Length: 319
Image (tube, rainbow, N blue to C red):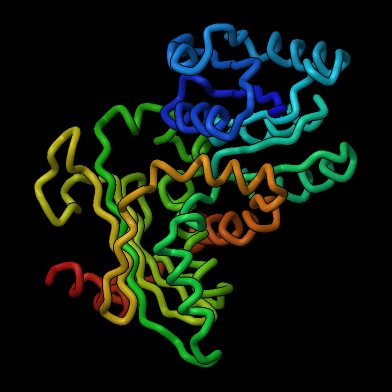
């Protein structure tokens, strides 16, 4: 018998992946909420899912079924809402007696993690997040190879992620620093988590450029020196953007060798759910390092543009 799931943010871009993962792991979606009523995606999987456009009524429903039978109660709440609401929706889930599975970033500010950890202890429920790049086979193999390297061996790494966005992006909550956490959090959080997972803790973080469309910086990690670039500007793509088919570019280069990890990224949520339900999901402490790093990047003073590392990275990009 599967578990009962409720979902917040059913009209969002990423919600279909979660709904599909819930179904493919043999579980049941028993409630959904979103202030926007474009939630026809629910009918792809079931025709009897109660839908709430008001979060207060959704909260009341969770409380009602919590007091009902075990077959009715919600065991997990999946959270796909805008970043600035994650913290509040996680709290709602835990107080309703459910575990929370929250899209990244888990929170915008790192100090909120401590409060959520305290609520975990109070309720006996757990908070999980979605760090699906850790499930990608090519990256898991890469981590195994890196873990076998000599402890004092340091690598030269560059990471670029450009994903073109139109004017809508900057008019939506995603383009708001207050509501999304900005470019490095909304677009880059899973990539910074990947870097820390692969190469270890942060010793130094330098930011050369930071705007609402582009960020560039340098990291000194345990096992690597990393130059990174994030952008939603189509002009930064190394090719002509083709709307609908060719708008993103990902590059992870280690000691001059390119690591291809663009395939299969949209199919990993089911694996994340399988691991979470088996007690092997990523929780608050796994999410903490990248949240803390991005907060540091967001709030640090910019280094001078003529910094030698910045100049070197720009030269690489121009080649």
